[in-house]
Length: 168
Image 1 (cartoon, one colour):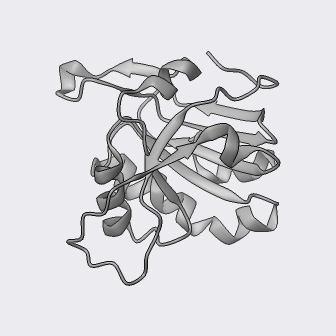
Image 2 (cartoon, helix red, strand yellow):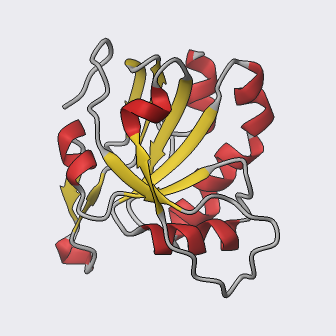
């Protein structure tokens, strides 16, 4: 599992850039988000949700980062990225429903390869979800991991926005 001091693995996620004029029913093609290209020279928060449209993700985790957006920016965070082991189309729809606008980049890790490279996958097959990421948050500064919070129990604590803010 990735740890503080490690270089974040490179990988490709997929996202749809925010467009305020995009209809809720629009289905644009996701673009690649190359991790090292996007994170190089920046301070980034990457947080992962096991499943878009699931209760904890929808009611606590994503709203917490939306509420903390300006506080994160004031601490030097350039990008807040939400990752899930699903495709960029689903993450785009979840972002629209969650009203993330341009505050959170909603990125899909379709095959789970990036989450596997982090060592942060879990098998939720018994819940009908298959292999997903753990719920986590990572602060990366110029590709170097500065904080990592991985949930060991249901709910949001060490991976939440307030925990991240306390470490900045």
